[in-house]
Length: 302
Image 1: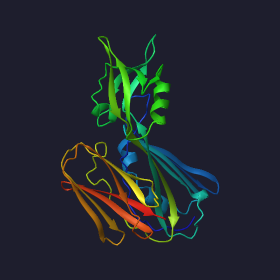
Image 2: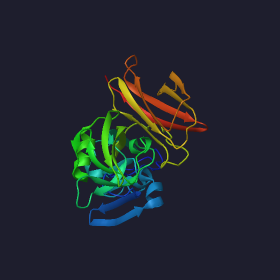
Image 3: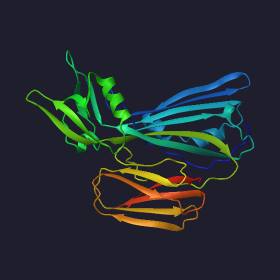
């Protein structure tokens, strides 16, 4: 390994989601370091220590070692972020900086935690995750889900499969039952975020983009997919606040391309933006809510 130049400070605060488990925060970073004689260091960070761990700084300070391996998982109710770095897998051995490469996508998400109904068909709903499709539709924790858009649900794995087979934004009908009656409810399928962050060596110092400044990442989520995109981008923004938003797009030099004020924000925003008239390169999607600004870098590659 070579002497590296520290390029950025990264603070993580992303979220966890699981169909069949309680929504419990998980923040873990594991580090292994080796010299020519074998392993010299191994440790695991959890909670706030994992969230504040400066990965580029650690790589830079230990670049004299033979190998560094870093893996992490930052999860909450609505997003799972996987963190990866292995110096043995790096191709750019002449790079002078430590950069991060992000890929992300959204998958269909209902927003319930439950168990297979004991002795009967269906799923007993035990918890509704706030700001999700189930919550917006007014589902309650006393419901039993017996059908998903006409498909009979016998257990929780079948519900998970049915949700993942649907489309984000699709309107579906759930058949629900409780102790008093059986009824139907329409639900618009929501989404959860899956993100992978790979650290790598690079030759040019990256531009630092501050994301989710206020630190309340359990309540705020911004993503854009696909990324890279060949033109059309889907933007998904969630916030515990219903304050009006300003959505803007700038190029990497800071030139304003688009600005839009959204006054009827209800906590969950989904919109599309087309970069078809722009040249290939990096663009910044920004959402301002009150004094807080949230940014996402998007790569256009036609």
